[in-house]
Amino acid sequence: MAILTKKTHALGANIGIIVGVFFNMYLWLNVPNVFWFWWNAIGCVVTMVVAYTFSLIIKKKSKKGIKFLFYREGKKELIILIGYFVVIVVFSMSLFKILG
Image 1 (tube, helix red, strand yellow):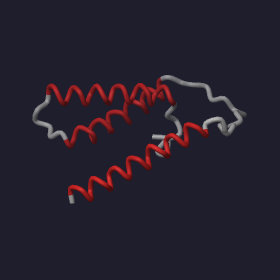
Image 2: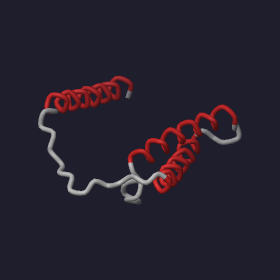
Image 3: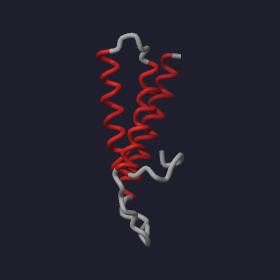
């Protein structure tokens, strides 16, 4: 949504994603005629429409002059995430060799 429009803000996006997830649950439980592959596409469209609509309805004041600071204290978390990524890739490649 941030690429398609600059009018969508965080509150609208959060409301949209909640509505999209609940709409997917509604499709899963009450509409058996819709093939489950389509749930994601329909949920995405619902999320985007609701997020954009709520962002237009709920006006948020933009704070001009905000300076973005780089978060340097997160090196530990970054190393942990990269470590998990490497473990997942190695595990996936070993499964491929075992099962393949």
